[in-house]
Length: 157
Image (cartoon, rainbow, N blue to C red; front, side, top):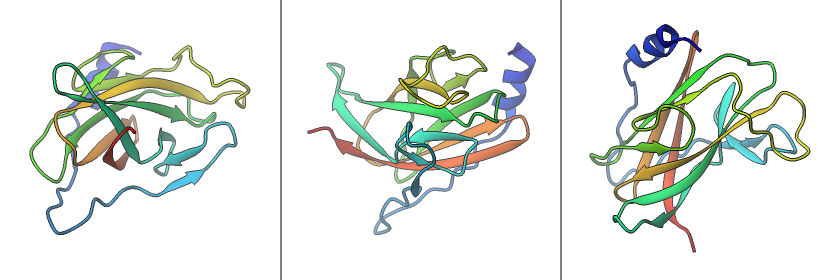
């Protein structure tokens, strides 16, 4: 993708509503869209693998959770993933994929396919880094659509 496309997506404001106690984290429902991808959160065309961030604590004190971002076969365009904590102040960073930091770029060819998956499904593995347990929302922007996915952090046993 060209830099102008990514800039247009990044210029969109984050529209992620906050929640506060005593409201529980309004996690996005999951559905099984493909037998190869497992439970996916969101309406698509780009989903997250589940609606929980199973974290481990890094040596720097941050919480790190593996998240796969998955695109339907019929969607071949880009997607920009950004997130924030919505139950208290807190930022999200991404490790893995393209353009590391506060945004994750999901380009046309991620080079990753799940073993045995149906042709056309794109997978973008990443690590989501947060500073504290809580409720996090992710906005995924494509050229003509926006999707929001809400996840709750849970300690990885």
